Image (cartoon, rainbow, N blue to C red; front, top):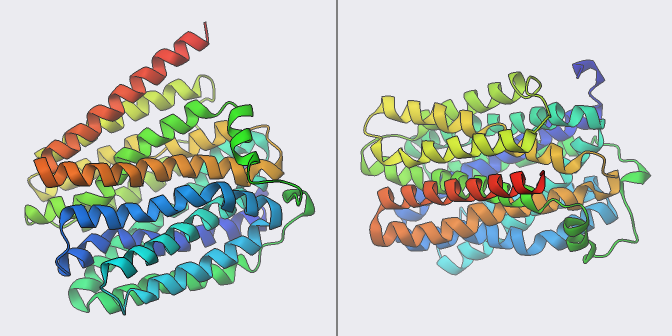
Length: 381
């Protein structure tokens, strides 16, 4: 793939998505705000998972609206929702209102990520999707450096009000970039119904992709949502984890995605997923800054290529008018993995502690990857 062939729409969608993800990733530090306001671990798990429940339940409708009324229009609506909900955290500490704001953020995420991903995918030829979508997703990784890394420092030096303002600014810039996107008529279909979301999953045979994505997300969610609290119990900072994560995932997606052959790509993904699980198993062994950095590298290397490769498999050969709903299914499975399992693992942490929680997450992913591998071997005979 030649960088000169990238369209303006791809570039606008990529950078707009990156900036939106800065706002989104800042909220991985929301547990610190909640802990500061005396919420329990289980309550923190509920708040963090509420975001995903909203995203999951609304995705069949939001992804259909994206394909029906246009990716650009729905992206702008989502950004306005994200900006307003982020700034609202400045004024509230009530549990019920916080849950409501997380529901709004879940809806905004469901709309925007599906829409921006569809814009990027529709700007690529089939042969370029494996690398192009890896490049698109690599820029979201910059957000984890601009988001959690700097946000932690802002919280420590200034406070949570400045943290929420800092977070919202990035969605404001994203809004400006999304205004520059130009859509074609073939990218929307006014006749589609919400029920077509489920038909597409069945007819396009992407269920195994969704299961693998769910397993990936369950591990991603447990690390991103609970690692900051786990490290704080050991008087360690999470900042260096996000620096390592940002650098390694970005470089992996840019430099390695085009080097892997698409032959037997799903089996290669399952190997990556298994190694990802092994990395999580050793989280309880972290006792120093060196361990944090080492885990960051191993976690990031094994995680980096799985999501974009799964997306490229699902989207190859599909009409542009389906892209919003296919991404909706992919992102919904990711949201289920992150947020439902965060809810579940929050209770495990409350009862048995973080060490057992991380090991349970690892074993679950390993078992799931093994079952998918067996099923893949059976179906290809």
